[in-house]
Amino acid sequence: MKNASAVKNKTLCALAICLAMHSGSLFAKDFTEKDFLVQPLGPGVYELAYDKGQNALYAASAPSFDKDKTAGLVFQLAASTLNIEHQIPTERRTFAVALDQEQHILYLGNALEGSVTLLDTRNNKVIKTIQLSDDSDPNKKAHVREVVLDKKHQRLYVSGIGRKGKGLLWVVDTHKQALDQTLEKLEPVGFAVDEAGDKVYVVSGAGELITLDGKTSQPLARVKVDPADPEHYFLNIALNTAKGVGYIADTNTKDVLVVELDSGKLLHRVPTPNSVAVLYNAARDEVYVTHRNDRQISVIDATHNRLKHTIKTAAMPNSLALSADARTLYASVKQDEKAKNADYVLKIDLTQF
Image (cartoon, rainbow, N blue to C red; front, side):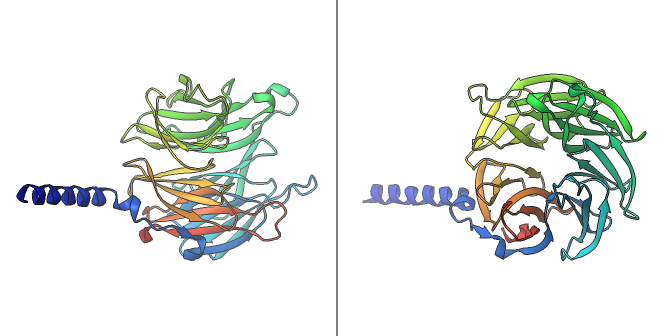
């Protein structure tokens, strides 16, 4: 009986330890957007940027795709309440955003015009527009998709989506506020910058991880992350430089891919639907991912590479931004094209998790 009792106690102890280790997974609560603050904005809302200095959130929008309605609109929201403080008109439609808070410049990607607009966040006036795409040359014509800032090296990386896979990577000198380089044959889609490591990581529509030298913007390495699957179309990547890994969102295939940055080796697959945006929160060691088709935002435990929570949305979550204190996540949520409701912004209190 003594042996049986000892075995039973050991088993219960092991079970308790197991439950404690996995409690974040077993007892995690799933949420809906009704648990958080929502602010309707209007049609065509895309990317977001958080400004700590003004405690503001910027949301880029393209209200119409009609040929004769080419104006854009940038919303400035109070980050705490999501109240609309300013509606800033631009001559060109705005989609992608990158904020240089210290220089008070918001970079706005004009997808359809193949350009980038610079907005002064102190007075909400347009500084200038830098034309990148050359519509007169088929090899230099592309739509702007993503803009990512490298403050250390004073560069803005811009991905251009061209026809038949002919993508361009534009490198803008942010000091001169002018185009510095145009790189071809990379098919760039999304970027992430490791300023400390002097590296820029590019994901492509061909399922590649491309590493650029942060000092020169020239390619250092190019790897097919999962060559056995030709369906990959990578949209975005988020970096966990402390662990030397990247998290890749794929619009064509399921799962968030965890890759080793140095080698491009596929380390893990986190089971999720196909994805759009991905963002890493170092303070909480979490990864946030939007799944437009499934109307869901995933919260992933980056320590164990497993799903912790899901947040169900009424429409299609698109882009993400994180507050400076890493306690609040913002998401833009888009309506179906046939829906009459406005696109909106969702404020997620991460301390509820």
